[in-house]
Amino acid sequence: MSSKRTRLDRFLAKQLQVSRKQVRLILLANRLTVDDALVRDMDYQLDEFHQVALDGQLLRGDRPRYIMMHKPVGVVCATKDDIHPTVLDLLPEEDRCGLHIVGRLDLNTSGLVLLTNDSRWSRELMTPDRHVPKEYQVTLKNPLSREYIPSFRDGMYFGYEDVTTLPATLEILGPHLAKVILVEGKYHQIKRMFGRFRNPVVGLHRSRVGNLTLDIDLPPGQWRCLTEAEVVTL
Ligand code: URA
Image 1: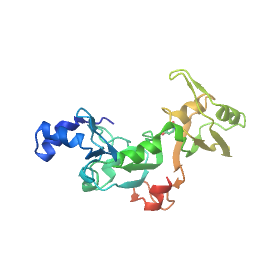
Image 2: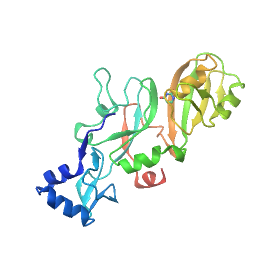
Image 3: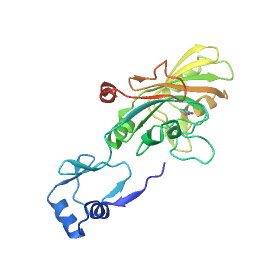
Image 4: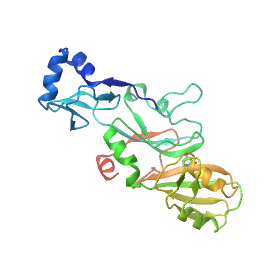
């Protein structure tokens, strides 16, 4: 997702209808925060998700919103796409503004997708060091073997990125069905991991992120707002 950037001084001058000199004074007086952190730098680059507040009053950035969506196969995790419908297209037009996607799924993966306009929350959730677990149900073309389990647990080397995957859990649920828990999100990670065993993934569904499980009665394409408790515990 591309994000448009604006210099903070330009934004403030326009928003408050004041001169650059007045903007400088506001910043020097420690009156301005971006995502709750004091900012004094005129050149600070704002992206479209930053919440800017003067004396504690939001100048930009809506009330924070947090959404759980059941992404269907064939819908793309992007804010715009010329070919496929996007997850934003599944929301009413008036609710889309300012939302971004927290951790994408591939076009042919279904399941739990989170959307928010709160960039601090999404950054925290996606920080690699936090190792937030994500649970997937995977359907494989060929029968599974217990030999896969240590490879998932010990990590696999991905030459393209020059990294070894972090320990992942693989549980065999049936001859062609597995549960996988990842604590990271490399590009096509699950497909590539099963690819090592020349076993194509034919179905992939994410059922959980952290301690938030996709509602079983939320049909594909539907969504709901998270409760305050869910937002906090995530
Ligand atoms: N791994 C994949 O290969 N695809 C996804 O969408 C998520 C994890």
